[in-house]
Length: 359
Image 1 (cartoon, rainbow, N blue to C red):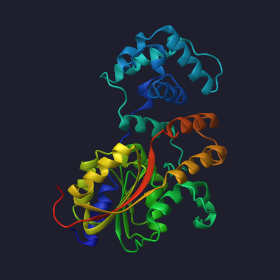
Image 2 (tube, rainbow, N blue to C red; image 1 turned 90 degrees about the vertical axis):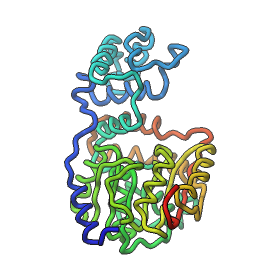
Image 3 (cartoon, rainbow, N blue to C red; image 1 turned 120 degrees about the vertical axis):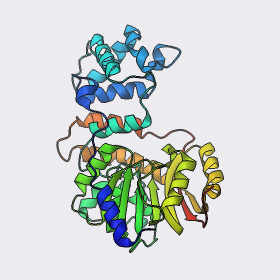
Image 4 (cartoon, rainbow, N blue to C red; image 1 turned 30 degrees about the vertical axis):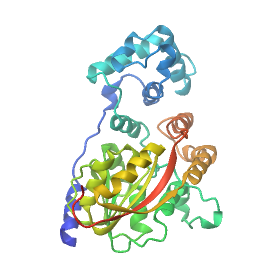
């Protein structure tokens, strides 16, 4: 376990490392606009291609899709990009050919590639919370926020619900899958953490977080995967992971969290998943060196937050200042990506690190 001053130096070094974008849009599918690129990927991501064949189309098979597929995609992309005229089907087909030339392999976009692309397309600096959010059923439970925090209220409340009255004063904390850094800001300013290491696998998120919080003392943003970070062993008092654990390789993540946190340290997790996934988590916790202290179903508050965001928060946010894409683009993207899934629940977990090595 490094001394306090040594940890600060390590985080300063990692937090200043140069990063490059994962995907360069200019090389990806020129000359499409960012809006058109995004909806090409959304169209395939949602499996709409299945309507035009019995099997989902692989990327390499896309150029050979029937004309009715390309006409439907062109109409969808053209309308939502504000053109309101169907793009020529050959326009999108040729774009896919260029894309395939730049990106070898037959598999669809990986989760990391998808988030990297979305991060660059939706790179507005003022959206620092990108989680599902939480809405308290009793308004009296809502935290008091400053005026500048109000646009991020639902995202802040998810952290408030997860962390509750736990005191982080003087503690060193890892904010895993930190996104644009809103949670790291919360840990520093509202929970009085001494040092916060925000880690994210998407380089664009790290770059945006560094830019948004450049003046924040004691908070560092670095690139790394949840199951393999460059952080020192046993250097942290707690680890937080909000709205992302379902995407991690579970046992590898729990072992990495065990490596990072001191004996007796805490792990606060918020995630969504199916009942099968929660059974897997329950079976993995102890074998990976943790004890489950608390579990709480927060599905109702999360779904209420999504409804409030779709009907009011998002509409207000996209109209506050000019955006890279039209407001309708953000609304459609948010509706698609964040929509509720049948059988999926949202939970908060609190774990305590056990002594000894993780299994």
